[in-house]
Amino acid sequence: MRSPSTSPLSPSTKPSFLNRKLVLLFALILTLGLLNDVQDDVDEISETHSDGDNITERQHLALLTALSRHPPSLRVFRLILTSCFIMYCSALALWVWEKREVDEVGMLLFARLEEDHPDSECDQNVEKVGKAVDEEFRSDGAVMRRPRESPQPPSSTSVLGAALDISILSCACLICFTVASAEGGRYINAQILGNTISNGSNSNKIEESYLKVFCEATAPLFPLGLFCFAVYKALFPWKERGEIWITLVGMTVGAPFCEVTFRDGFIGDVITSAVRPLQDLLFTLFFLPLGLRAYWSSYTVDAAAIPIERNWIVHTLLLPACTLSPQWWRFCQNLRQSYDAKKRWPYLGNAFKYMFAAEVATFGMFDPSIKKNPVWICCFAMATLYQVWWDVFMDWNLFEWDYVGRRLALREERLYKRTWVYYLIFVINFLLRFVGMITLIPPVHLSRTTGLIVKTFPDYWMFLGPLAAGVEIFRRTVWALLRLEWEVIKTRKEAIDRQACITRNNHGETNEIELSGLEQESDMTPMTVGSSFKSLEIRHTLKSIRLSSMSDMNDVQILTELGVWATVFSGIAIIAAAHREVL
Image (cartoon, rainbow, N blue to C red; front, side, top):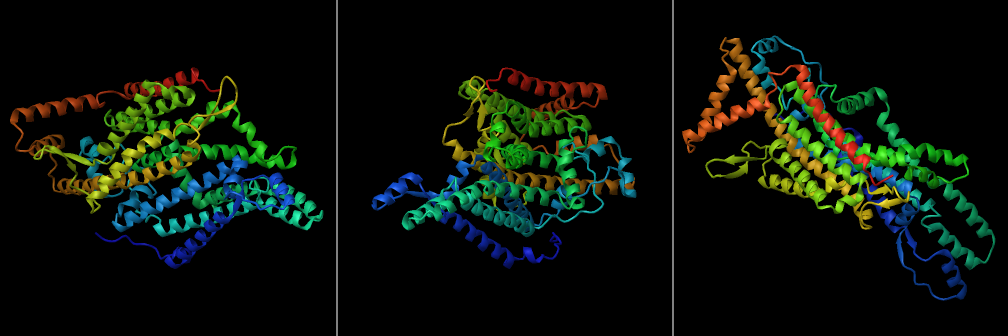
């Protein structure tokens, strides 16, 4: 296989330049670790200095204290750092595909797709073969709209370089935020107070008061400024960024009004793993105007987040929307695929997966006490196991039944050389799927009886919660390695079958496709299986095809059936919201 052509590396993505960025990032992280904060308060330090006794002070990271005193800033920094981690995972996936020389990555994920129409005389001949052949050219119910040319995906080094740039800027802002957070980390206050007591002058006290006011005013500016800069770089220049956002996000959110390609479903699955970052993004978008308004009002910037934290619209509508919207988008995409292919399976089965997970999360959000209910726990486990089963046997087709050995075995067609890689990804995906389901539930909720913010999970979850979001993103990354691999294998098969069909059509050798397909299936039946079992298996296959197919239904009947699925999805969510225990 030919190696993909890559564009020359820019100076900022050369290995030597990347090494310099890594050294700088390590130095900034080390600086953050050196900023320590005393646990004793300022009054105790003053009394100890006045007595002249030795001080034994326990120290910890000033960054943790500053973030704990500025919860809105914690959410903003968490959003930016999570976005950086997504870029690191993307660079990892691109690096793996570059090593395996997977040329189809650009075509499947980064191509500018045109409308589905014949581009050549051969394509016009293929369309004359019939509807059966046309369905063979579909992939997972998606219309195979072929691009005029297959662009090259961004290199892993360029994505890594961009992630390092954002990480360096984020660490620099964290350092400035920690040092400026005099009310939070008390790093500067303790140093100034020590000089005040030792010198016994009043000038330093005046300097302390001015510095304290200055730090209180400037500390929240660093996360807000970082967020504004990140938004600007993500949207502008609009001629370059606009098409990406419209194509990548618009086609996903536009379901079921748009035809669904592999890229649309792939991006939709990625968004389902970004629920926690979406919640932080929602909070930041609301906090930004209120925080800026605080500078010409009587309240502080941190106090501007209180109306958001205790707003019933946020907890009843907006946060549940962040959880349910990605599941709903993928659900609608599968309904559209079922409508286009006029088949129930596997599209409605995949839609049920997202509906099941969304309903379990909905009851967990609106009734936090239900998490101790055995019925909810069983539904949680069943939804997670169903997702694992779908990953392994539908998205990856990882295992096949070995009729000779009477056991499940890895599929023979693989792109990665090491077999242990597949087993490792299977174990990681199985274990981390449960963590991913937990991330669908917000960490806090607003009590309906007291109107106070109540933690949904135990206290230790405040430390594990941010890690859970990163763990889910990493799980989605390893999931994508096998998901794209299987799609590449299917694409290559379709290309071979397409070329063979064009050759037969040009030579006037078109045959009955469905009949030949059944004959090939019969020829592939292993010799060890008896003829009676063979006929029973064929009849079962034909029966399942008839149950799955909706080709004998008109568009109104198909839309009615799919509308019932959408009504069930939204109806159960409304029932859960009507019996909510949160405000």
